[in-house]
Image (cartoon, rainbow, N blue to C red; front, side):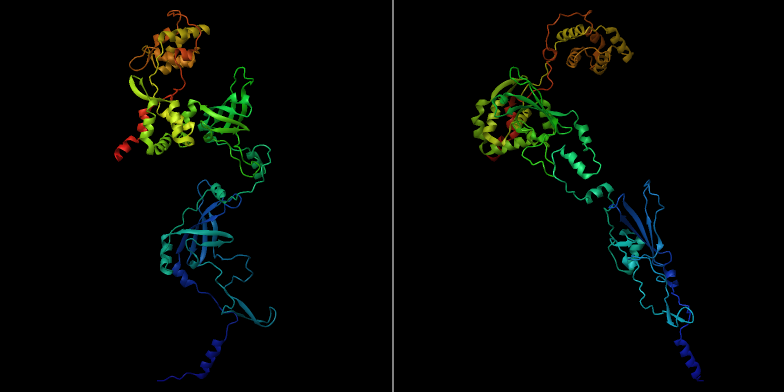
Length: 568
């Protein structure tokens, strides 16, 4: 049976379909997206760098993107004891605009736009909704396609850089967008002080005007409230009381000044220099402090510039050099043993005291003429018996002439002295003190200072070790001497400890020590006035070496004999 449609009904359906309701139930359906992506969140790690502002810092953030409604939520990771009064919420959940320059006007953010098509005013008019969405744009907000590792997002004027993401986020972007590179960004966490040092622009300073030191003037230009220059405290602690002393002679056009001798002291703790003049009788010069301790500028430089001037360093002082200190020219002729030992032990900082480099320089110069050169100077080699051993030696003056003939201006006195000290042939046996001579010196010192406190010394020894078996360690004996204030020089104390009776453990006999302090029970012959350090204990603060050089040891170190034999 065929049913025919009613033309009137069909016409009415067409008319109803062409009409729009005055207040339509226009609604955006988001239920399907919510059911698909509910509780599914894209998680990114990022940071906001605010170190360029005053008291700013680097904020580590966690950026959450909710797929169900395209909203953002940003949380801050606060470290322990950070001192920040915050709950960690950086941005509350909501849609994030890409560009935010003003607040939205009324009705701009609503999903439906109402059109006034007929009538005037608010009464009697006919209103329709914009079902097509003319002029409506929805691309001003961040979406999942705008997020990736290394990209920047603008959070209301604060730029956040995304550095990494979790595994679910990686799977989401790999499935939907085909991304494969999820390498996290490292090395962005830098402390504030280092960041400011990197970003700090070099300030152009005015030229130095000559008032005060250059560092003080520089501090007045950098800050409003000037501070004194900071010292290198670590260097001060390491090198406190470490001084290098050099003997020097003045070079001047005035004939009398050429006979004046000075001691130049370089202080390693603060790089300052002082000059002291040695007094010579009937010279016409008083002696004493010549240049006060201070940092001294190197000559031939323009100090009236914004740049810091250069000062004398420890490497500028060595044997054979000429230095100009405050317009006075000095020729460095010698140095004390401590300075030589210090430079040799720090040969990486003082290349002129590096034995390996000096030997290599001599080796390179001797290689083509080795045999002829050694044969020509064999007459200067003298065989001497040192410590019951026959040694081929050469004097310092002879070796210096040989090296100057070989190298000329390529070698200086500092290198020659270092080489001679390294291959010295002096005797290393220690000269022992005479016990009776030491006893006489001790009695003479006690009598001169009117010391009669032996009973107190015995009590101190007893209280120090009541269970002693008559023997005490050398350190306990020295402690007793210092505690009882026995008037003995340190060199005499060392000599006395050397000659006192000892057992197999190295302990000193207490009775022998007390007899050494008792001139009544153990009298000795009196002594005439003498120098205790040199005449009794043969005291030398450092063993002077380098006057005689072991010739065979030096040639073995150069090691050209074996090389030539191998080549032959």
